[in-house]
Image (tube, rainbow, N blue to C red; front, side, top):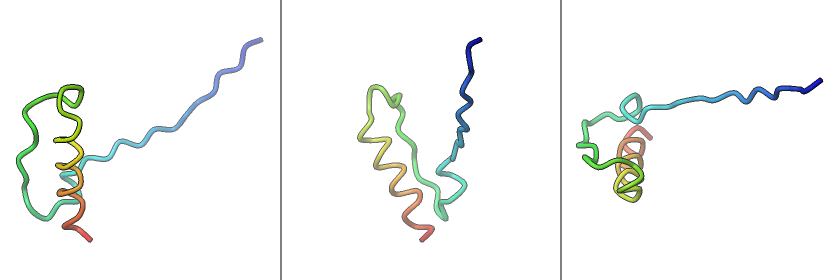
Length: 48
């Protein structure tokens, strides 16, 4: 008998934490990971 491991996943959107609205990158994460990282940092950093 095989066992199945369930891994909980929590998806968090940066918009929920940001006090300001920031322009999100127009490229996909695969094509612009640094731009998406910077967007995330800006979005969550202003919420303390």
